[in-house]
Amino acid sequence: MNKLILCEGKTDAILLSYYLDHVRHWEPCKKGPKELRICADEKSGESAYWYQRGEERLLICGVGGKNKFGSFFKNKIQSAIIDAQAFSKVALVTDRDNRTEEEIVAEVCEHLAPIITQASQNRWINNPYQDSFCQQQDLSFLLLIIPTDQQGALETLLLKALSEDPYDREIVTRSQKFVDAITPYADRYIGHARLKLKAHLGVTWAIQSPGKEFSFIDEQIRSVPWEHSKILAKCFSQLVLI
Image 1 (cartoon, rainbow, N blue to C red):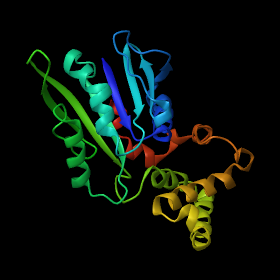
Image 2 (image 1 turned 180 degrees about the vertical axis):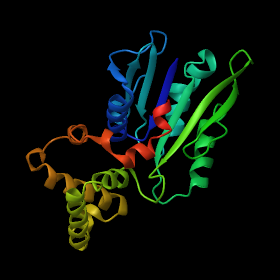
Image 3 (image 1 turned 120 degrees about the vertical axis):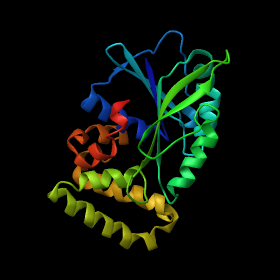
């Protein structure tokens, strides 16, 4: 059967694909099922890549931002599910930021209705829906809000994972102090909390891998053995069951 993971952007998709490859052996494949065509608009920040494990297929899509889950799902996914039951499992991975779980659950169910009407943080929930022949079908849905235990975003999770190593923990801590100290002088660039968080991760990586300062972030993500992280193992404990 086909499985689907929706995430905010390309960086999230790269991390998830790396992790699922190394932990659950989902390997990249060039094409998905012949009858299923999901086209991503890369200019809008979207991505869509297929992976395989035996006879199973997994599609990981970056939708181009946390506010685009609804439009991406309705325009590119919904008809494939209603008309052909294209996916048996769907997971949605999103940043917590400053939102409550209740707010995120309500938003997700609103954007993914009428297929997804029930969701709970880090739990697979069965969602019955009506197909194009007015027959009831079932789809298993997972909502994963990251971090799972505090406000923040993907960068927060990665920094926690990097801090598992005592040597790197000091680098993460001192990078944070540097970013905090320079923020008043760099308000134009990191004036928002989300940008400041990205700068924290960027400074940490620049110190850990100074030879890759001009590399794209996807190369940096793939260079870290995330599969050994206990923090990520706990966060992705349900997602790996897709």
